[in-house]
Image 1: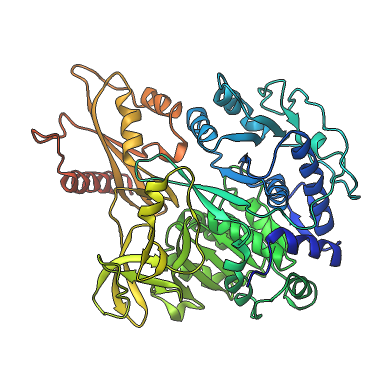
Image 2: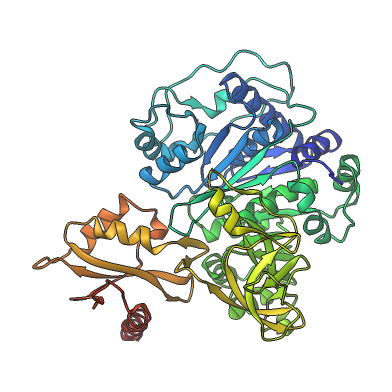
Length: 563
């Protein structure tokens, strides 16, 4: 059974409850009717720009209303939206524009300089659509037959760096358009995640079946049985679903924040947008209270700790928030304890992957449920080396797998697709590579991934990429990168560097060198210098010793600055 697509339900909600708020930020408010009308206007612009079903439209932006409008326009017309991390530097952005064969790039004017550098010299640069960070374009309200394409204009945003072929977003949506009654089949959402070598890979989600795979999670959270038809889904959104107002404080480039927001709109709810490239906890609290948020989406302690501290200091609690969803990194029990003290809420701490899931969740409804324990979801399994499910064998070790709804594979990487999307015993699984120990009663202990990935604040950092950037510095002779424990971010990217003979490396200059090559979250938070890494004759390192020594040195440093 296939219910329909997200865009099918959104259009139905816009017709049945046009004045209900859909997308809200400090500067913009879009009802469901206005949200749909602006997406239709943008779809008109995409069509006249020559963008066709299956083409990639990159969204290189922090959370903004225009992010969701662009996503809507793409999903409704069969164009493939491709969210990219707004922290990427020009070289990183260029690589992924080429990788997904981007036909259009949507970005805020504050990132114009990065975009200009990224597309410089490209043989076929994507068309550019620039959102003025300070502008609040008015959505058209009357869908009509598409007219002539909007003329290209020179960018005038704060960065003032975009080329003369960039089209201003507010001009692109100035003329009304119309969405197809039914999206063309075969649509994809291309959501990038880290690869084992550090090069991100686009995970391909089939948008024809994306909503069907999320029916249980969408409707179980509000205590309603999933619908069977689009018409029933619209009726639930309009008449039966409780008010849902979701405030994602994790960026839309993270699957949990994006999918939770999409499904909020399916329920006829409101997505509250903290429109900033950086977390402003005071502004987040203001939005939370002013817009009466009922649901928060976080990314572990990296986001939760500053928010909790600010709420405690303000003495305002968390208002009407009744559920907190976190993924990317686990919340500590102490942070959960503080969250429960601020409101009567349920915390779902998810173990998920861009490729599928969630595999497990630690759910707490009060401090009495602490310490939290991860429990496998219904469609999750633990597989041994032969692909046999062993989640019912206490003490068994295996790789986490998921047999519910998951992505189709990776864009342009059949080998990696075969490695991650596996078939055992006639059943298909997604197996990203995380290992777990079975504890019994459905609970597991997460053991981590076999690769050396560093998970810092929910962002995946692969050491090889950072090490190469360090070795590109003329005064660095050798380097190794790994994760060390960090209270807020889970792990901190840490580098041990051997300077070239006679060199004295200036930390500030090294930071500038890395800033030109790496996104901020990939840059080492800690840099230690050594005379040698004591490699073996074959070049091997005693990585366990290096990590142990580095952790001890950093702990000693921390203790020295505590009064």
